[in-house]
Image 1 (cartoon, rainbow, N blue to C red):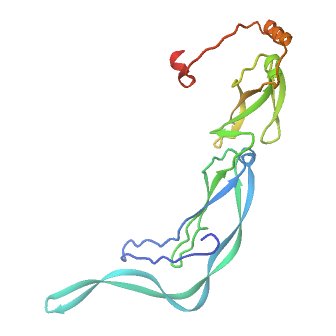
Image 2 (image 1 turned 180 degrees about the vertical axis):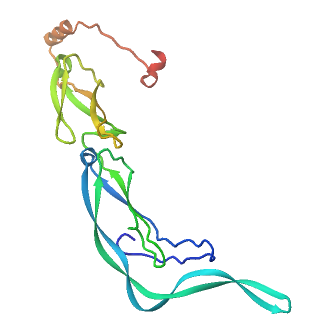
Image 3 (image 1 turned 45 degrees about the vertical axis):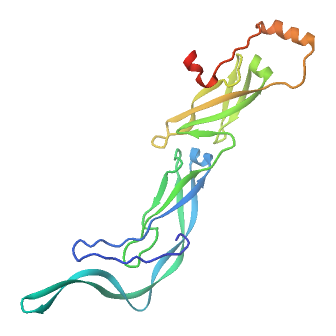
Length: 253
């Protein structure tokens, strides 16, 4: 339907409170990047819309069902339903190219719709339906979105995990988020950066949070006996092994 294929729907009903026939709505997916949903953007879409043009001859239109009374004899009548139509000038549907501009507003969410009233499927005897673009958020290489919050993972070396580090994370609009860790970072440790998430759609001045989860890249190879002894002295940690149900750990804490 979006590229010019259309169908006609016949109207019906009585003379009283007869509804205006309406063409079908069209819903189209619109792929949008997380960068666009963060900063906003304008997207142009070419729409081939069927438009009614005058044609030769006439056609039946505004068809409806009416009650007709027929006399069968003295004092005898019969009421039947009969379809009644008007004669209207004939038309033909011709596809016309139209450029639509869609505004991707900061903070829009996956599945949110952007409507164009009366840009949907036409109806030869009534009004056209609506055209709605449904936002389809594309997957991102570095960030995961949940509501207005963003999540990302950072892999650091064992040295960085033990002695601390500084780094910058490039955000969706190019600005840098500075990260400082001056204490030991364990595998799975999470840092929260307020105000570095997605803008809120209703209020762009409010932003969600950025959650950073750290993974540790342990060195490969083996240590000498001297290196092992040196590590034991530096870490000052006894040998420890604990077996537990990680999925239910909170129940037994």
